[in-house]
Amino acid sequence: MTRYFTPLAFLLLVLFAAAPVVIAGTPYEQTMGLVQKIFYFHVPSAMMMFVSAFVCGIASAIYLFRKSAKADRLALAAGELVVTFGLIVMTTGPLWGRKAWGVWWQWDAKLTSALLLWMIFIAYLLVRRFGGPGSEKLGAAMAIFGMANVPFVYVASMYWRTLHPAPTVVPSLQPGMRGAFWFCVLSFVLLYVLILTLRRRIEDQQAQVDQLYLALED
Amino acid sequence: MKDFLRVAWIVMRKDFTVEMRSREIVYTTVFFAASCVLVFAFALVREGRPLEDAAAGILWIAIAFAGTLGLGRTFERERHTETLRALMLAPSDRPAIYVGKLLGMLALLAVVEAVLVPMVGLLFHAPFLASPFWMLALLATGTLGFASVGTLFAAMLVRARSRDVLLPVLLYPITIPVIIAGVRGTAALLQSTPDEPMARFWTALLIFFDVVFVTLSLWTFEPLMTES
Amino acid sequence: MKQRLVMIAVLVLVAGALVLAQPPQAPPATPDGFVPVNSLPQAEQLPAAPMVIAAYSVVWVVLIAYIWMLWRRLSKVERELADLTRRVQDR
Image 1 (cartoon, each protein chain N blue to C red):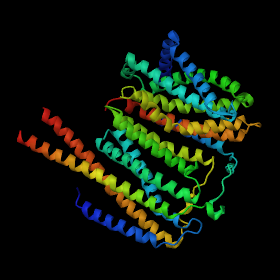
Image 2 (cartoon, rainbow over the protein chains, first blue to last red; image 1 turned 180 degrees about the horizontal axis):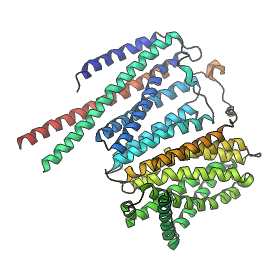
Image 3 (cartoon, each protein chain N blue to C red; image 1 turned 90 degrees about the vertical axis):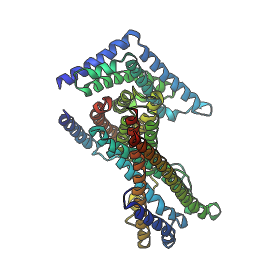
């Protein structure tokens, strides 16, 4: 574990302890009222989900073309995080939507793309677990193709109907909300980096264990 | 370039020759597609009669299901006779083998669609021939998109465990844009006055999809199929 | 070969962009009777507080459970690694 992990973990705890206070201090949004406060955790989680998908896609490409085992381990860690943050997004979103829109789910562009990205990475984890030998390459293909797919799903879903708040909601935030929002984004970025480091470490240690087992057999 | 096309053509001819001996895959896949359509006709009913607005969706679902089955069967045959490994050992451009297999899949799906489109049109009173050019364009670009990703995934899964269930698990999320575009475009054409600008938009989206994913498949075919 | 593929891809993309240059109609209005929640009578509106509490609980539970699972796995792997290193050194 690097030297910075423990102090950063402590900082993360402080940030997350402060978050409810910061969020409670924000003004109510005009149309949606109290339920809009879900946004402060929902949007950063969605951001981290997309960032992680990107990391997984790039790492998979590096693994596939440069045959780097380290990149493959990073890809697996990032893929798992897509599903975890996706779980948060997919549960907090409908809870917000049920109150704000009256329905649990709508097939607009953002929701459809997010759901599909989540499902693609669930499939990624399934193939890595159950694909047998050589499943690293199968997973890498899935991650790369999944990444390339997202813009198409977004455009296709857009010409169906669109209900999600317009993509430009962040610049148009009231000043009182902006501070809290970026505070939460920062907390989630730190959270993401720390969890990714933890998860990667598990993979790296596991690879060392496998090597030692092989060495022992000789 | 000429060698590339020659290899692709040889691979396709090999598949065609083998298939023509028994015609097993063609017959069973076409019949499976027809059965799918029947299941949907009985499942999606309103007031005791099949839902006619569902024609576009049913057509594309049947193509997707039949395509998945055909892919699985074609590559199972390759695995059984170990010809894929022999092909990869040949001193030819690897992506050419992919193109050959893709052309074979396209031919199979063309036969399936030639049966499906009239069948769905008759059973659901859907005027598929109202705008034949755009209908053909949608079918061609959509099938190419589906088959391009499908051929790559089926080839890379040949040596994997649980390959039968993993192919749909991997393929369907990636080909959702094809389904969306295909169904929306077909539905636009099936309206009382065919909405051709809409069909053109969806065809353009499918062309983009095809370009991106055929290119991706060609790039990743060799690293995926070979050991490091 | 790859450069040629890229060139062909770019050419087709440009052609496709020209085809797309005709903008399609605007997205259709939702025809399925969707009514914004604020226009509903007061009696039909949901209380917001349970939703907010549920949402934040979900976030905390998922994160804590996941981190705890990771911590357990990491301890297990590190113990195994230490054990193996000792065995290799003892040989």
